[in-house]
Length: 346
Image (cartoon, rainbow, N blue to C red):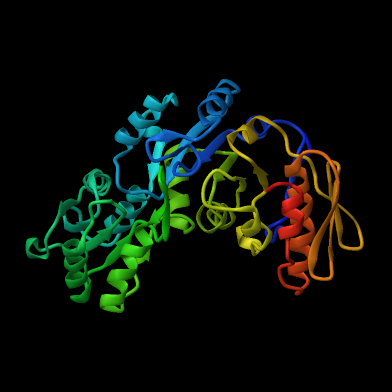
């Protein structure tokens, strides 16, 4: 097998000459924007995951969404045609609860701002979830839930203002839904931060507590992070020192990818989860700041990306990444890629 990456400061996408299902033992899959959007499965997700499982790859579902317990998420996946057990789901509520358990005595009460997923995770760690400062909590934990309102945020602000430890499951500013992009937990955390002037300790992707929780629970030896977000999934993989696959079924656009700093650059990229079932062509430097992938060659001309050739449009995008990232790393700033992407219809 030839499996290449571009090092920790990735200058261009990596290549792999056999299916990713063979090169990695476990796929650590984000959920929102990768497997489903709201109540519906994303296109090609169900059949691609079935094929990956049949090929021998373990599937684990790793999400920053702390609102639902793993059993509920597993049931939803199963209903969509993706068989899953509660143990296959790792969420930021579990990582947050572990952080809280390391900071307060066993059996402590913890003020919950969020949903049932946070409550279950706290109970798993021997803590007692409560909903009011009047109950005498020793800490505050906050996670996304669509029912969180002003009274919940005010209660958290009162508790944080009194000096209680404050752990946030994640700080994603947005979340994909069936109707589009909606505010995420980061917007709710920002309200408490603005009211108190205090910064929370954050458990979720891209920070190390979530990677630690995932490794503990899956035992993965050759994991591949699969996600749709550069600032959580891909940066989390970078922080954990593992490879990643970016899919374009959620938040990230090709324009965003071309302007990505080193910590946001994926090892591999694909339109959707079908990318798990194939290899990835190498991106090769051909001199003069130009990069070739498949039938495409990309370079930077007068501050804009230039593309020549034909073939798979994602090979073209890989070549564009090589040219754009090299220019950025040389201090030239992100080149304009709109015309080149229009040629690829991306």
